[in-house]
Length: 335
Image (cartoon, rainbow, N blue to C red; front, side):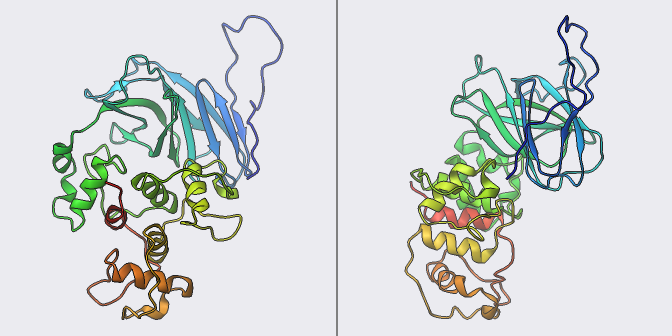
């Protein structure tokens, strides 16, 4: 990916006193993407995230501005208001990283994440694909729009609380697998108290879940062009080095594409080291399964990692849900 560091569209020049700095005219981002670093904020724009040039403005918001955080949370960073000069969401997810003060927080007792402020609902919502760095003072997440952002710490739930925290898994067929992965720290729920078991999973999310679940040893290897700046880069590179995942080609992995059922079957078959099965599992749409996936689908079906639908179909190109991913990955998870 071609990446450029964004510069102010009208940079301030010359020396002197900056106690009264000029108005921020914005940081320029073009269609080729780029990286912004300013005021303890880093934003990675992938190639093609915008249709045309935009200007990005980053401002710090006073903690007394009325944007109250939930009573159960601790505010660890400045509240940053990030805007752009054109309306609409981004075409691809951006990765935002914020610095925070770790001096008064125990990471063993709190989950630390970036949240965005939902203006309509008046609530703070956690970003997708949260990654806490090894030093523990920077955290990243993915988002497709700008608003106000902050780092919040929330108390970690205990194991016995899990079913109560996520009422939408109470009657779900994959409930036990979901709880298993939640308690192991492989997956988490959403701030509204739900797990969203029917929500689709991306190729990156599935890979990260698998890597965490089996405690995969990290290996260096080829980095796909479209994962070079992605939040899941290390997991994807490591899983590819182990031969568990592969890209569409030598350059593209498609990390943000929704993972299909046949793709998930292939990956889980490799991770579980299932023996190839040639026998037709007799799905009504068996002929629609890609040639490269048929043996893996049959093996995953025979070993009860996957199942078909009541109408007898498999729907190989259908998206894999969070519940389905939890069930498959839970079966091979290291205890």
